[in-house]
Length: 341
Ligand code: KG4
Ligand code: ZN
Image (cartoon, rainbow, N blue to C red; front, side, top):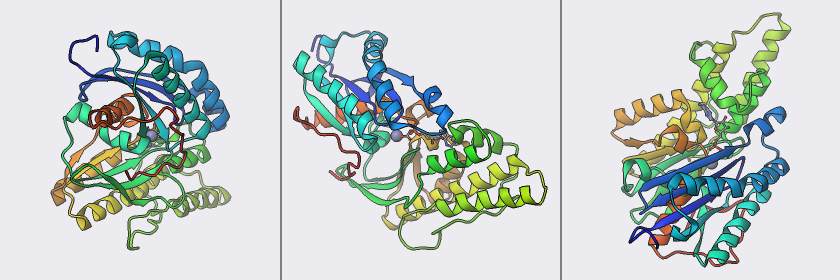
C-alpha cells in the first residue's frame, strides 16, 4: 500500500463489448474509469459478434489498464487488489479479462477478486450516492439482461424475475435495426421517441397480468414488426417517431410495473435501477414518477456508470475485498453466473 492507508482496487470489465478498467479508492471514491468502446466494430452487424469482441478485448485491454493507471495518478505498485468480471457474459470475452487479471495478480503478488457483473451494475451506485442501504430491490436492464433482484439486509442478492426471451436492450436494438436506425438502437429509439406520440399505437404488454416477476418482450417485438409490415403493404408511410415512442412506452411500462410489483410484494422501499437501458429517458422519468407515487426511494447511477464500465467492477470488488472475500488463482469464468452468493 504505497499510498498510505488507502485501499486501491483496479477493476477489469470485458464481459460484452466494452473493454473497461476502473480504479476505486476506499470503496467509495472513483479515481479512474476508462472505456475502449467496440461499438464501431459491431455496428455493421447490428449486434455484438462474440469472436470480434474477444479479439478486440485482447488488443485493447493492456492499453486501457495503462490509461486507467495514468488517469488515477497511481502506479501498479499502489494497487491493493485486482477485481474482474467472471460472469455472466460472453465466454470468450470474459476469458480475456480473467486471464489478464490473473496475470497481473500473479506478477504483482496481489489478491484476485471475481465479480458478478449484475451485482456490479447495482453496487456502482455507491460511488455517487455513498453506501447503499439494504434491503433493496434492483432492476438491471441492459443489452444482455432484464433482471429484477432483491437484496436482503445483509446485502445477499437473489433474482426475483427475469426476461424469458429478449433482454430489454436487445429488444430496443432489434426493433431499431428493423426500423433502419443505427446501432446500438436504444439511444436511437430514445431520441426518435421524443418527437413521437406514445399513444399512437397500442402494443401488447405481455405477462403484465401474470403472477411473478418474469417479463417477455418477444410478443411486443413481433407486434411492432407486424404493424410496420401491415402499413407498408397498405402503402402507408409509418410515422417512425410514433412507432418508436409507442414501442418504448410498452417496454418501459412492463419494466416499471413488474419491478414495482416485486418491490411492493417483498416490502422493499428502496430501488436501484442500473444497466445500459437505465439510460433511457422515458424509463428514468416513468420510474421516478411511479416510485414517488408509491413511496419507494429510487437511486439511478449517472449514465456513464449505467452502461458497462470498469468502475462498477472496482466498486463491487472493493466491497468483496473489504469483506475478505478474495478468489483463488484458478477462478473460472461462468457465462451464466447466478446472482446468489
Ligand atoms: O449495460 P450495457 O452497456 O451493456 C450490456 O451489458 O448489454 O447496455 C447496452 C444496451 C444496448 O442494448 C443499448 O441499446 C441500450 O443498452 N441502451 C439504451 C439506451 N442507451 C443504451 N436503451 C434504451 N434507451 C437508451 N437511451
Ligand atoms: Zn452490463
